[in-house]
Amino acid sequence: MNKALLILTGLLFSLTLFSNAMATTKWDLHLNYPAGNFHSKGAQKFADEVAKATNGELKIVLHPGSSLGFKGPELLRAVAEGQLAIAEIPTGMVEGDAPVLALTAQPFVSTNAFEQRLLYQLSKPVYAKNLKKFNQMTLYTSVWPFSGIYTQRAVNSESDLKGLKMRVYDGTGLSFGKATGIAARKMPFSEVYPAMKAGLLDSMYTSSASGVDAKAWEILKYFTPINIVGPVNMINVNMTAWNKLDKKIRTIVLEVAARMEDEMWNLAGDMDRKSRATLIKNGMAINPVSKEFRAQLNAIGETLRDQWAKKAGADAQAILSQYYKITGR
Image 1 (cartoon, rainbow, N blue to C red):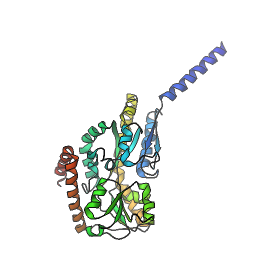
Image 2: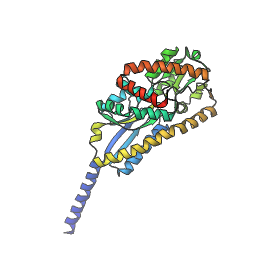
Image 3: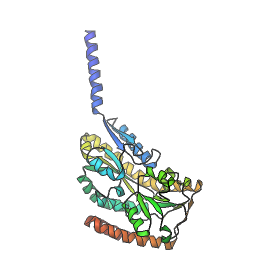
């Protein structure tokens, strides 16, 4: 009798283990940036909090540095097709598939993180509508410090931009290059350093935080904070994978995601200050933008935004009009 009871207890224990294993869902999260980048650290905190809040029923495994092999412009379709259950997707990199998503990546459209978040909040319903067509939804977003330009020579006016061989990361960068005489080349962040060493590039446009990640001071001398854009990243999940989760788990994930979004947007300004200090500490000069140069940049931005909005469609034009009215621009 005792032996039979022992066997039965063992079977029940095994079934419990099997049931627990079956209840655990694993998502592999594609991240574009190194593990030490603050976006990647935020994603790790999100994954840790989700695992804790769901008692391990949902496990999110991070793959930083694009180690899963996908490039920025491919990510919207990779999630849509289920090649990735979840991925970090920069809005400005996927406008080839969904032009309106580049709304928050337009040049000089905002001057600070508050305005940029306002623009994103106005855009959210249209973003959600377009993402639904790609079988995905956004769990949370984060924002970068505003992008400036890194160069080997000082840049103090629009005329100084002409002839630069610059790495950019999105369509906005390509349009800006065309408007100013920059030879702009769009390429993944991981390819920038070798291209600089080979002489294919002599400048790049990115944030202060990415400049620290790249140790830009090793090959470039100046950072000019033209603040062309504060790029927004989406953490998007495939809807098929999402709908497989228990309703209770989905509710928990959304609660964690909402907290994460607030934290990441609040963190951007602090990261910018720390990153600029690191750049200066390592010998990089940060040149302020004069009023004359700022006026030149704003004029370029207005022209480029108008051109983009005509191509992006009525939704984009309506959001921009509402945003301009609120901000008095």
